Length: 438
Length: 148
Image 1 (cartoon, chains in turn yellow, brown):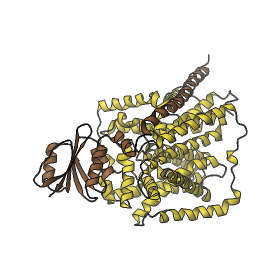
Image 2: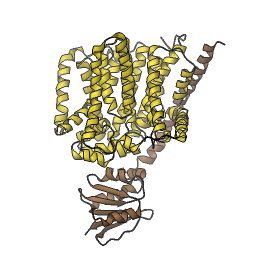
Image 3: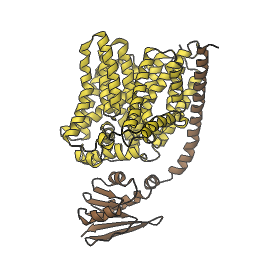
Image 4: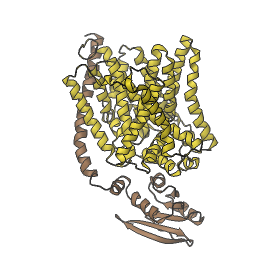
């Protein structure tokens, strides 16, 4: 029964995200599939922020008070759009045998991940020691208790823990098996997001192929459901991917709507894990450069959104005297041994076929061979390499940080962009193959 | 052979190997799901947790069963997972953990704790009385003492 309730809750959150995108036209109507891909992330982010704000303003976390505002929005949306709803995006011109093969393979993988996520309670250390631990504490306390945050020695942002608290509130109890379906949902909606972007640019075969390649990467299978579900790395990978796609779309026509959506997603991204801040800065620098080149300075105001999200959380931590900060746990320290280990450990992980298949080998091969690139490809590379560089920098300059303990998780943040980048590089090389690309 | 065609061949080969590996991983996972199902499905929720967390699972259940919700508990255990897993199982009870026997003896004398829980060790203090002992599989011994 709990599984069913959690699945319904995930659908509800996705519908909330979908309705917000549609009502405020955050995306063009024709991008239906991408809207669906974004919907879960936006819904989950907004509901988590709602819990955060309620707690800040001492509003009780009752089911009614949490759900009712969204029900109003949903009713309003249905009232406005009932007659216009269309499922045209589900229709395809022609299904070939190769499509059926990829779809079957994807469905087998999805079934396996779903089966695995329900097989056991949370297993991975970060799952029960950080993300679900705080979710449980918030649920028991009925609010965000800063004393509890000090007790668990954590200053990580709260979005993922609050998302899981919301699930517990709906269930009326803690269920650390069923709640892992939130990780499974990130796995599915990330795949939908990647597929929609690829389908928009390339053929169905090509889109299915690269979606299949992403979904069968063993690290994603593990984070989506098998043993490592319940962490924040897959969600962060999802938000970084969606934010980067918004940036790419924004750069095409400098649309204020895309910049607004981008900044909302960046605001959520930095509240998923601290590493999201690197992405927010890198993406903002690129977007601000575009603003400067086109002299559309009035668009700078949109960046206030994610900066407010960031500052508010920092101020909350200061005012509530959270002692255990990332800096206090990882003070500055640099040695040659650490530097070599940072580079060597990262390189070793990049060629770890067991975890990544040939994702990183193919990515760096395409990079080193200087495959002709388009603008999208360049943007993807800037985000991927700046994020990776930031992680290596952290390993070199901070204590108690080694690739052995975390690089596999950190690469999850940029792997979806890596797959997308390879898809574009291959497209450049395969232009003559009529059957594969347009 | 032009440089472009060489690039194309190398990248296509990598892509091809990647596709093959992905197909193999689908079959590997499908086969693995059978053995995973055999290993996990027959287990009860408690047995699953013991398989994941070892004897800390029955230890924390033992503490939870015999202590009040808002008590302070000093826990002696040399398992690195004790602190965070202890909070995960026992909140809103407030716990303090140590694996250092000297520190443990010192803290026990401060009388700040309502209970002392010990995993595989012995303790006797004038101000605490032994209220529960449980022997667990593999010569594991849990003790719970309450402040007098």
